[in-house]
Length: 156
Image 1 (cartoon, rainbow, N blue to C red):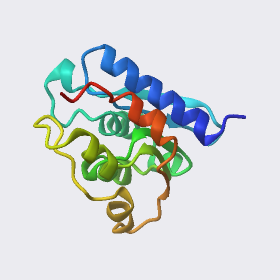
Image 2 (cartoon, one colour):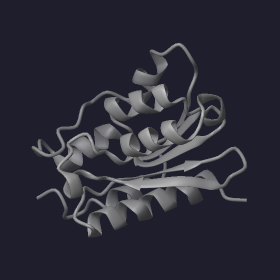
Image 3 (tube, one colour):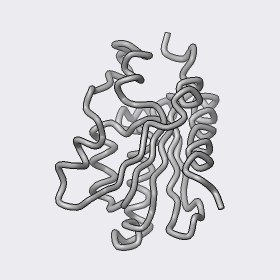
């Protein structure tokens, strides 16, 4: 059986693949109640020019079209970095029941600085998700060094 760290490492690998494809280095996966990986998404900004093409938002849009909210309530989204306010909102509205992330948004912001393609918000996903009318479990940050490594040298 895979652990949270195993799944998170998969999302980090997807972030590496996104970077290699010319996108921002972010990745996310959706894991079902039985532990099966249902979907994955890397950042889509570089491919499409969509500034909202964050890996988590892309994944949650696809998940909300493929599965009912009742099913997604038993699923976990793993993200290589903490979901921003937009992505946390997408997870909430899609109906996912749990979020696990690597690098925190605050640490990501310190790493990147005021990069015009990723102006991070110092707004934890727990704050966004905690403002909702249903509970979403949040675990993170985890594996921060591994999560940070995929960004090294990218944001120059």
